[in-house]
Length: 103
Image (cartoon, rainbow, N blue to C red; front, side):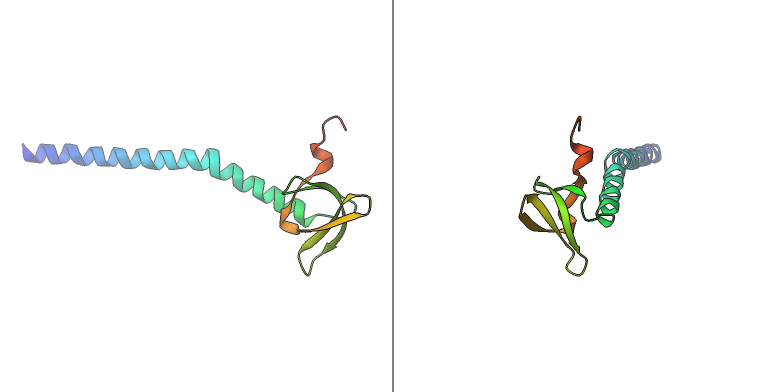
């Protein structure tokens, strides 16, 4: 009788393990994978920046790229006529022309 209880308990542990693996796979498929794809798109955009591109910075500032400094990994962004700020290249996230509706 004791052998029967041990055998039944072992099967329960396997089903818990299978459920945990299934939860991890579902979480990866719906949360981690889309985030990785989005990060890859952002890196691709940052590497394709050119002078004159309209961008949005991580702080939500819209502007136009005036100069790209590859040595310091920075971008000079004109946010108003004659007002230029220097932003780390990693904080330029989006194309401003793609985000403005009905433009």
